[in-house]
Length: 415
Ligand SMILES: [Zn+2]
Ligand SMILES: [Zn+2]
Image (cartoon, rainbow, N blue to C red; front, top):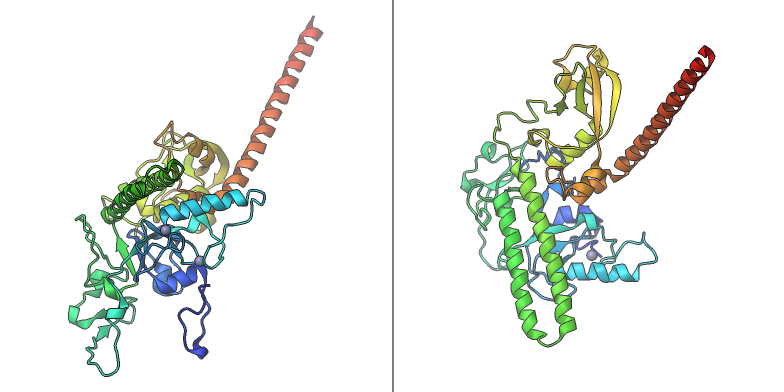
């Protein structure tokens, strides 16, 4: 298990598992658009899963499934153990078959038996060049010690010899160039920081390297298993799965980052961002606050919202009026409107859009981790809307019928 790996002193026992263990033991390359206020305030708060671009593992590890020392396209599951992507895919599907009869039973990590959450799998960057063994101080040897400086309000601590500009670096510094297709992390900062920002090029490049590593390993394996059709078919199956999973990640990241911010002057700290439609109407048509929350989770900050979105409407709620109270409480972004304005809130049909995103590519696609985060509320709202829709349809039909009857009765009476 993952507990007490870190602590040799008896009195200093800290029991960490899951995301707290991962938070304490690895470095993180994160989406540069997040604000990470919680982590800056408290280093024990794990970073939101969707903001992590790569977990960085600074040691040589081997895959517990294939026992290879060079993990290919490594992925970390939620206990902190790492596997090759193809090994993990094969493991997941094998286990599913044996657990067919107990659907709710989660798969367990083959090493520590921690319950695997498929929505919390993270891509890993293994940096085995950064091996502590070559850098450890030893008795009877000389040792050069660096003076580090950490301003009171900073979570960043750097050697003073680097002449750091903390204001420019900010608490979460960049660690890969924002322009070049660099595959290297900035050595000036990387060794000293725990959380660093990454950009699209770096991430896409990582995925591309993984794809070619998977394919060249596949070619080697083909030679090894030459003539064994069952084995090569099986290899092919999981290589295909892994490649298409990587392609999907690339697509998600490209979409997520393409929105990026032509104008950084306006951001969440100094502006409100909200969607509105039907500008000819007296009613102000807005997006429901629940859907705003989902979009914020997807785009990390309101300031990254795309300039327009195509959605499928599930329901519109009418009848809310802007008041002195709710403009302060909920609708700060409408403080430019007079009290008394009539508001209508549009609710998005996420399920419809997920089903039809292949035929209409302009629909916003929710990655499964974000969908699952809101799944319960999305389904509850859908049920409520469906019930209301049918009730209203029934009432309408009843009203029509009684009107017809009245008309008939009227003519009968006339004649
Ligand atoms: Zn493996
Ligand atoms: Zn484990």
